[in-house]
Image: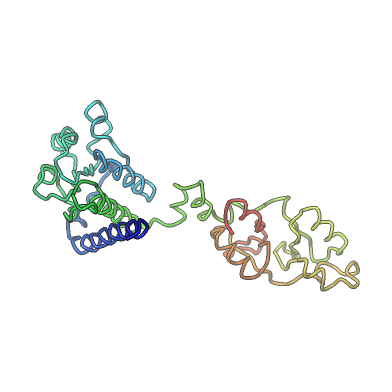
Length: 322
């Protein structure tokens, strides 16, 4: 067997073992999971996540996922908790303590604090008879299936199951609270994810930047408007100020003969494709790609058809969409 074959064989075995363990975890979920969700929902304060070692690393991720999906949470290191950070935990909070063995000595002071002040405690462990699980009010038990290394020494299967349990808890809470993409964006304004969740209103051009002419505007003036505003199009408004049409490069080519003898109304394309201001920018990109256009006027679908803004494909490309 070559080195490459050996490496791939080991990697596939690890992934297979972890996938099998996840199936067992899914089948093992019971009313205790529902109790944990309800306990968090009933909390007036925050979710305090704590763990040491690899459990601590997973705990950091669980706290971050909870916080970004509408459940206020933060991580407290158990060693730091013993040196003042217990003051961060209040009676209105819920503590989620993580320990695969359930016997991490670093958690002792935090567990004692929750019992002393009646703070709800959720234990996440693979050992139902451990100190952690005996102290906990609610038990999130992960299957004890060893580790992928085969010697029970390298946290792998256990950390994967712990992470999955945390994700399940966060997403169950998110769905119950009807946490939507627009809410999610409030916690993820930057990066690729923030771009995907941007609304049209976040990127569109407004006010004097809009290329607009009236229906009776001579095409000589309409061409100046198109040139000055730099989007390659002009919106055409009716006597009430509503968007009645659009003049594009294609319209100019179709009316090349005698173009300057026409008005905007005679050249425009009626009933142009528009987008709502609260639509996701990603949706606008999809519309532009489908229609093979580069600009969309923004119109409130529930009100007067006035042009509130203009979104150009370059605006979307600039933030990483497209």
